[in-house]
Length: 120
Image (cartoon, rainbow, N blue to C red; front, side):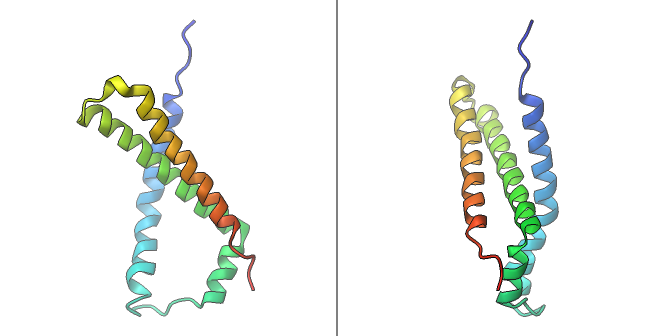
């Protein structure tokens, strides 16, 4: 019997990360990178942002966004190295480095989200 591949799960993470990143990251970048600094929209107060980020549901939601976006990047970068640079002979090394860095980045995100105080 042939062993099952983890490839469908990786493609699921890739597509979910792409969709969420395409929907939410541009909005966050626009709001916090342009609209608030240029005062097109009045920015939220620091205490309010801290209260919002202190909510466990918001932390989990942001972590899921970071986790899926990192796995989307890892899968895209892996296949860029395979197909674009023709490095198929380094299959295992590239997969471990790409997905390993996504796991490490997700762990760092968990640590950083855990360091946010629970509000004022």
